[in-house]
Image 1 (cartoon, rainbow, N blue to C red):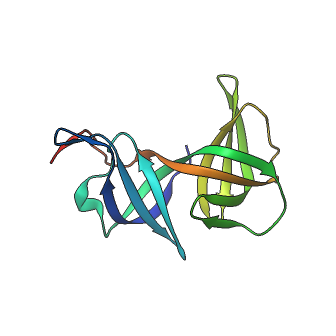
Image 2 (spheres, rainbow, N blue to C red):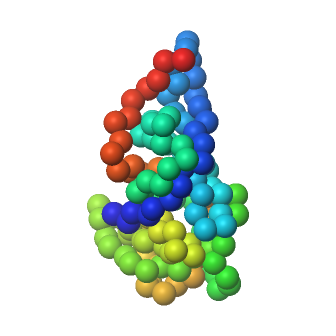
Amino acid sequence: MAFNVVRVLEIEPGAELDGTVYDQWVKIGYKEYSLSLFDMNMLVYEKAAGDYHEISIGVMFTELEEEEGPMMANRNMFRGRVVAVTKENGFFEHVVDLDGLKVILSDHEEHKIGASLRFKARLDLLDFRGAVGGWKNI
């Protein structure tokens, strides 16, 4: 699993029902980028904001194509280069470098190491070192 050291900027509650928050959005800072990650397991604790942490990021894409161009990360549009590929459970797990930020993109098609991928996606928090997780009462 690819881990990145990023700064947690803020945490925003997601789905809430009867005073319980079930997921959240975590805004991170990396180089000049500010990105939002969906944290469906509530891994990031409130006091993490403002500090640097090790995280792993997955990609839930809706559009994907091989396309040359500069690396980018802008809202939900990304372009990066494949730096590693493994096959797991019938899917190819690609580690994609987004200007130093490594994300994991699963696809039923293999994209070769060195390929430039442009994709529209939601970024998902897969792992947070030191996480406890769990729903929160508000």
